Amino acid sequence: MTSAIGRAAARFTALLPGHADLADVRRDPRRDLLAGLTVAIVALPLALGFGVSSGLGAEAGLATAVVAGALAAVFGGSNLQVSGPTGAMTVVLVPIVGAYGPAGVLTVGLMAGVMLVALAALRAGKYMQYVPAPVVEGFTLGIACVIGLQQIPSALGVPKPEGDRVLVVTWRAAGEFARDPNWTAIGLALSVAAVMLVGARRRPTVPFSLLAVIAATVVAQAAGLDAAKPIGDLPSGLSAPSLGFLDPGSLNTLLAPAVAVAALAALESLLSASVADGMTVGQKHDPDRELFGQGLANIAAPLFGGVPATGAIARTAVNVRTGAGSRLAALTHAAILALIVFAAAPLVSKIPLAALAGVLLATAVRMVEVGSLRAMAGATRADALILVLTAVATLALDLVYAVIIGLAVAGALALRAVAKQARFDQVPLDRGDHSAEEHALLAEHIVAYRIDGPLFFAAAHRFLLELTEVADVRVVILRMSRVSTMDATGALVLKDAVEKLTRRGILVLASGIRAGQRQVLDSVGALDLLQHDGRDHATTPDAIRDARDHLRQAGVLPPAAAHPKQPAIPNPTRSPQSSQSPQSSQSPESREEPAR
Image 1 (tube, one colour):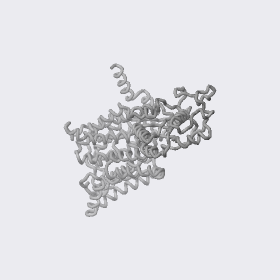
Image 2: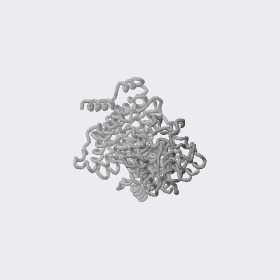
Image 3: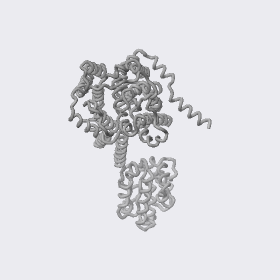
Image 4: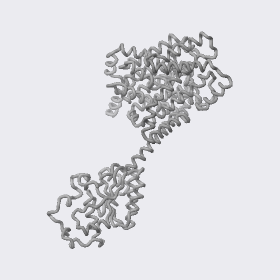
């Protein structure tokens, strides 16, 4: 009991900030402060835009960027990660707002935070490495499309139509625009997006998003453009939400959305941290600490009216490129945004919705890495299929289903590829110490097969089909030293094949069975069938001698006395290899005859 408590305490302590984090902060604070300022300038319009897109308003986006950004910076597992509201999370939140309202989103965020802390305690962060790259690229492409389509109503200057499917909403918004065009809104949106995209290519270090939003706001206010609807009043501070949370009786219905939010937060945050590691030298994130930090951030953000948060790849990349080296940069970014909330809320409230729509349209375009998509699509047909399916599922269904579909298809294709590696080849018998006449008889009545690779459920039935079609022989020898892995299905199929051959009067012998395979074979009752008369053959020559004795007893081969080279009694001068017992200390592989 005491040791279990000690291990749990040690695991929890490992998730907390340590002296190394403080040392990193002290290394170059000036550089981190400047990086944090730059990230805050970039993050401001994104936080506002994603808050509006989520359905909870711009103030929710700012609260998330401040609270979640600060806590994830302190307790997260990356020195360079910047957290806050993201487009991917917005995609998941929109249907939750439609189904449960704003209070449902806050409750889901709180539940997802608890789940992330639990995942950290279970050390689940390491499993991120098993998500295939085509799945990641596919849902990134799908998210970019969804984010872009979500901005169509605001960019067109029409009220957001009813519906929880982005394609339906976009179609209805286009219909509204056709009946009553709002060229002012669409002009602002396209201008902001164009400035961001063109400016980023020419001067990547300049915060064109903020400059474009300021210019659009000034133009809209100066010209009195009523059609450019502003985002509305913001609270001058952070406080507990007046919307409240759903009652405990509703938690069961919110469990599935909370799992979806937690899964997305974990996936996107760990992906973003991995990207940050790849952009630097000497930095390596702790995936379990990152989950812990994101969990605390998502528990706290709803208490201040924020939406669920994740690590933000775009803001993290800006943080790295501007020279950040510690958590101080992300903390500075959160502090500057908090200052804006307290000091500049009236100014921020005048930003046109169309301008924020332009920011997110440009963000969606920049999310699509054309080079990565070409690489994935050109790698293999399987990779291209996984990428396309994941992207289409993200657009047509939702992100969680898309990831599940992508992982399922990737897993099925991987199993298919592994199953194809399994080989079942007939190999010639070694002459050994047989006469030419005896070897000819042996070749007529004994067939040997070598099994290479995995013998598991995906390849087992092909093995059964090939083995049971063996021609009319007396003995089948299975050389199993090269079987890399075997599961219960493979063992059952092998047992079935042996039983079918036995009913046809064919003796089945095996050689080179490994220790790990014995347990699986024994568990399904196949091991006894492969141990003829209680003898377990360590090598193929041993199995051939046993087969030869069986054929002599059946009268197929002449008695041993008729062949001087094969004396009836053991010969003391016989070679060590031919007299080895199955209990030899050498491994089956080392005693197996050379591969043919």
